[in-house]
Length: 96
Image 1 (tube, rainbow, N blue to C red):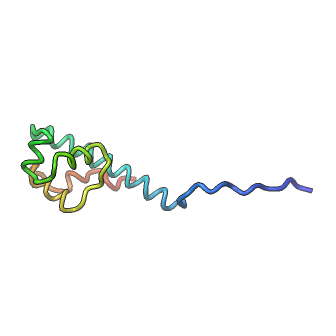
Image 2: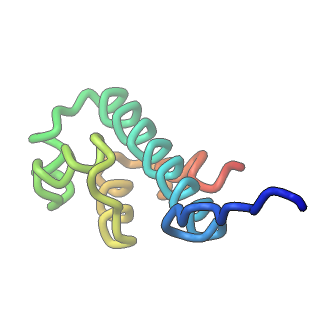
Image 3: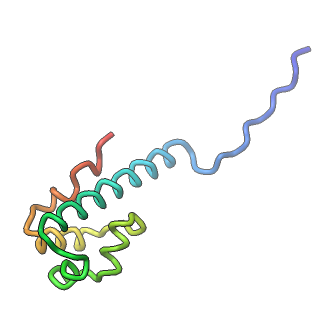
């Protein structure tokens, strides 16, 4: 008689959801790296970018720390303030 098989423990989200979360996380890290790089290239502090873009300094900090995912309006405001196309902030967002 074969030994009984044990059910695998539930790991929470299904694989598709886990992959989507991972992609989102990678995207946030790519966005954060792009924002930091472009902000520094423009010679701006977070406070100066906040004043120029209308996005609060605390939100810019959260974006750079990947604790907040940007809305489209935020991406557009930051791109305008940095004088770059919005796509420059999204480089690497959907890389696999």
